[in-house]
Structure formats: C-alpha cells, structure tokens
Length: 621
Image 1 (cartoon, rainbow, N blue to C red):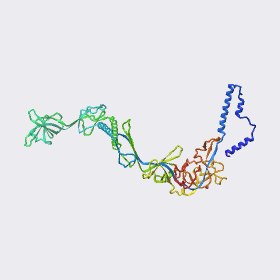
Image 2 (cartoon, helix red, strand yellow; image 1 turned 90 degrees about the horizontal axis):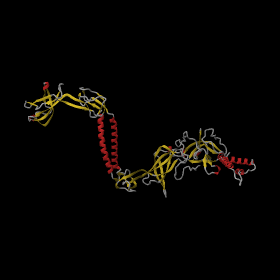
Image 3 (cartoon, rainbow, N blue to C red; image 1 turned 180 degrees about the horizontal axis):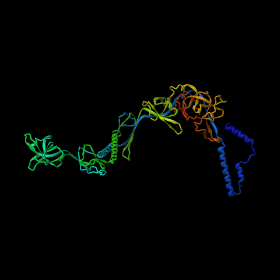
Image 4 (cartoon, helix red, strand yellow; image 1 turned 120 degrees about the vertical axis):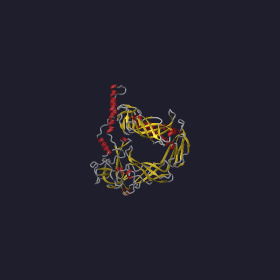
C-alpha cells in the first residue's frame, strides 16, 4: 500500500474507537500545578519542570521514528528516433603557442609595443649585462684555482704507486712499511751504473777536432784501464785553467765493465785531424750515467716496500705503494665544484646571449610590452608577451564513458556566435589524456585539447563551441529504434531490465529480488521487464527488444520531507543514481560505442550544436 492509503486507514480506525475527549496534555498538567495565589514549593517546581522535559523528549522521539517520509517516483518515457552520437561542449580560447619574457634589469634599448606584429628572431629589448659579465670573470678565477687543485690531486693519486723511472740499482732505502710519509719525502735512490760519464775541458785550439759523437779513449789510472768512449755533449763555455788556457766542456760516456764507481778519477785523449794526440786540459771524476732520488708522490701510509738496497730493478717496476685514499674524496669534491662553476659560466653566457639581448622565439602579436622602474631595487621590471594567433586551442574534459569514442587527430567542428551570424572553424582533437581524473561528484573525465585553425581570426579568451561527430561507421547508432532514458536501465544476473508501468503484469516480467537485480524497490503498478540494449549516448540507450515506445519507465525515488518540510532526499543514494544498475564488475559491450556505459548526466557541457539532437529526444528526470 502507498503511505497515503495507510494514513487514511489509520484515521478511520481512530475515529471508530473514539472516546470522550480529554483535556490537552499540557492543560491536564497545569491542573496539577499550584493555582494562582498559592506559592509552589521548590519540590513541586522541580517536579513540574522534569515532567515537561520528559514529555518534550518523548514528543521528539515520536516525530522522529513514527512519522514516515513520502517517496516520490520520478519517471520517464520511451520514445522512438535516432540516437545522437555527437559530443558537444564549449571552451575558452587560448593561443596554441605563446611566450612570456620577464624583464628584470636595466633596460638599455626597447623596440616593441603592445599590438605590434613581430617575426621570430626580431630584437625585442636589450638589458645591461655588466653584472653578469663580472660574475663570469669571478667564476673563471675560481675555476682556474680549482683546475690547479685537480691537477695536484690527480698527481697525488698517481703518486700512490711509486715506480722505477729507468732500469738500475736501488740504494739508500730510507722508508719503512707501515709508517706515515709526506708527499715529497725521500724513499730511496735509483742509479743507472751500466754506463759512466765524465765532463772534461779541452783547449779551444781543438774546437774543430771534437764534436758530438767523436770517439776517444778514457783512461782510469786507479784500475790501469783504457776504455773507448764517445762524446755525448759539447758546451762552449768560458773556462780558464790555472795556466791561463781557455777551454770548452766535453761530456764523455763509456760502458761500465762492472768495476767503475762514482768518483773515480779519469782522463781522456783522442787523435787529431793531423794525426797528433789531443789530451784533455784537466782530469775529471766519474759519475753515473743516470741517477734519481725517489720521493713519495702522496701523503699517507706506506703500505708496501717491494725492494731492498742494491736490488736491480726494471723501468716501470713498482717500488713502493702509499695508501692515500683520502685524495679520492677530495678529487670528487673538486670535480663537482668545477662542474658547478662551468654550468654557472655557461648559464651566464646564455643569459647574456638570450635574456639580456632578447629576440622573439615565435612570430605573432605582442599582447603586452611595458616596464617600469622599481624604486626599491633601482631596476626595471616588466614583461613582453607574444601570442601566435594563427592557431588557438581550448582545453576540455571528456566524460570517461565518451572517451573511448575519441582518438587524437579526429576532426572537430568549432563555431563562434556573433551578433549577426555563426562563424565556423576547422579544428582537430590534438590531445587526449590516457589517465582519467575524478572530481568531487565521483565522475571521472579525461583532459583533452582541441586545436583550432583560426588563421588569426580568433582572439584569446573568446568562448567557442565544439561538436565532435562520433557516428561515422556506427550502423547501430544511426538507426531509428526505441530509445529509453539511460538512467532507467537496471541490471540483473542475465542482462538488463526496465521497470515499466503496466495495468497488468507482463508475461515476461521478472522478480528482481530473485535474479540479482540492481533495483528492487519501485512503485506499485510497475514491473521489471528484461530488454535487449544497443548503442547509447550520454542520455539515451537503444532498446532493441522488450518494450515499446511511449511506455512510462521508473527512474528513481525522491523523498519529500515529512511534516510539510521543504527539503528533499533521495532513496538509495544520491539523486542522480539511485535507480542505476551496478556496473562495478565491468561494463557490457553494447555494440556501438566501445563497450563502456556513457555518463548519466547528459551528453555535453554547454552550448550544444544548433538545432538539437538528431533524434529529437525529450529531457527526462
């Protein structure tokens, strides 16, 4: 029974059982209170107040639990026509390409004004770059110092391994494994005693007889040896003997038979061009052909000593190893500092070339071009804004259930209403996000952009309308069929049903409670009828079989506030979805639109194409 019928029956029963009318409750209560002229006692006053409070609470509970809300059934009607397969809406134009240059500095030259047309590469303004140039010089000084530190650190790291520079014999080892050493400390001496050398002086009278490579005889008196050597160097110095003979220096080298040592006295002679013997004016002391004091190349712990005194070694052989691992950390720090200064210099140089001397990056119209002096900082501040208005774009949000019908590159019709006519533009769906975003109402949308070939005829900030025809290639969606409000569709285990008003129960009616129906509460005189569905748009769905046109269908309940109140509520959820099927397990494939259900709130976001939908559909609910 309806709530009004129940109320009528209750009223009739109450009239039949009527008894003599009693005084109102509060009137009877007053009879028990002291009368005027009698001062009530404190106990009587408190008792009366307690009774009043209890009765007020009981009245509130009664109104809360025993006053039923009246449910109002919202309905729609099936019709017959063509399903509109277009997506419509509106948006505000912005330039597809624009640039903004912020001015902050001292303006030296200014070349543009608002409204000017500029080409890419045109000079816009010039700022004073003195400060930036000074910063570059300071950074270059710091960078030079860092490069020196880097070189020293690299040498120190390389100096951890001490090797023999040439083949020879190790002497005078002064280092001990496990001890700390400082960079430059003497570790040993390396000598090449396979050859010996001596420097003697000859009279300038024999200058033409002695050249580099001349062979001569070296005499070693202490060992009574006469060895053949050759001249390796000649220096024309100004040396005078005690007898007053002017001489030049001759360096002689000879192979060591094994008995020669450093400090032995030697003399030399050779045969002159005329066959006479030429003797050196002085004797000389033998020296090793090569010798080197080996020092530590880094500071740290001497972890290994690989040689002993008088050991012969080969060129490149490792003699000592120093653990100087701390240098690596320092090296990495310096390298990072170098990278930072190099980036700083590069950025400053780019700023001088681009920001201080500003050229237009795009062609277009100058929208903003001004600057003024900031009295606090003493610098000029402002901006230059350029719009390329050959193409404009609008940003729109596509309902999640419409997005599967769209793809990037689709043609879009865009139009603008003027005071006298409607102007159309070619446009393209240039971007469609792959990720949906949910809003506060729980509806998800995909961000999209439409690029308009405006040819400079559209300004920024203009409202335009768009129309995307998605019916191409969809045979089902363009056929005339029975159409039902999509918000009337319900689901059950085997498919979908509509709740249809009928004088009698249809033969194919089902009981939603027994078959897993998504909506089981609906008015008397309505029946759940299975239907076969087809394509859909944001408002309507094709009914291929199950119901006919012009039938009333239940959409949802809306509650009227009890007791004559003016507020409303919705049974079973929010006002827009109480009668909808449960699609949480995934949407069905309706054959015409990609298999996902459309939104239940209409097909567009405003504006619409002139003339309305092709199906001439009314508005339901």
